[in-house]
Image (cartoon, rainbow, N blue to C red; front, side, top):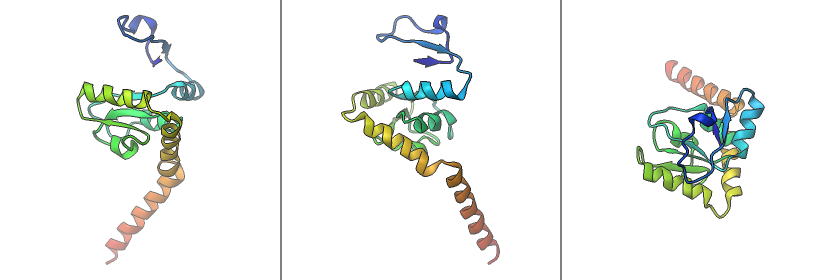
Length: 142
């Protein structure tokens, strides 16, 4: 499944069947697409903390990405996805294979969802900011 592309934009010579979903306009459609996928591939060579990775993990879909930027903050290598060697198409392909051939895909999917629940909910983010502010205020008052 490829989101954001039309049938005309898809390559025809791929060794697997590819289906274009076109532009997804609602949050429900996006969540359904993420949840339907076996793996989400984020091939960015430079990125910080992309929402697409968090959205995929939140929908219990493991992510394969290069080990760059903020990806290691979200992806626990071989636990909820795969961190490929930067700029290595072969390593990225290895990661896709790792996820697709995993003996217990439900374990990867559960770990993907747990990562978001345990680290990226609004409450967790607010608590992290409050802790940081308190630490900074404590340093300033000394």
